[in-house]
Length: 108
Length: 117
Image (cartoon, rainbow over all chains, first blue to last red; front, side, top):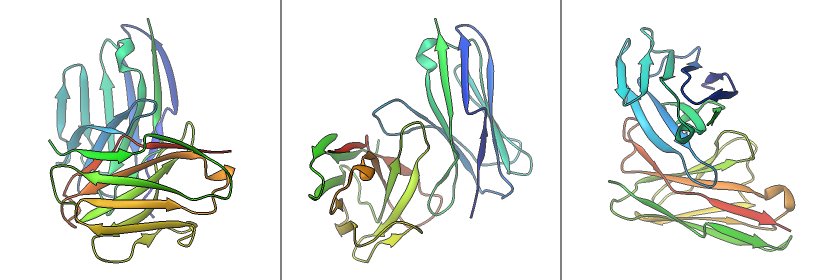
């Protein structure tokens, strides 16, 4: 069984603060994905990281894939209320293996 | 981009009845479809994987006789919850993939909120 651990599980911050969410596994993944899910909707893919050490940026979001391809992080700069949601990392396997998620709340 | 449509988005039914949820890939052929269940404040848990034209593969602990999956065409998979029980109330999400290769992206539907009274 492929397991992905995410931390923290819950995060409540003020608008403008920075934050980092972590995704760790004992398994090596060929690639890893990050999703954001809002209440009552399906998850939406944010990014796929493929190469160990890879860094991808999506506006204020920075994603990094660990050198050993076992872990990843998501850093959000100057968080905004619109960033509120459930962030899920998923290891690309058959099928996708989801972490438990980080529920982020950004307070205006 | 690839679009997956789920219907209905919300359904309420009585205990003991059956309810069907549809998952359609609108602009691509989905060789493989996945059904997930998500309880409040939890992550997505895979229920089953279905490949077009063959029987679904169920995850451990998921009753195949209770959760019937049909993937009869390359654009449609259905999940039927039979003998519905209040414990089955959950958010059900499907996803579809063009091929069977791991690196093919999965595209998610918007989910179905099922409430059993």
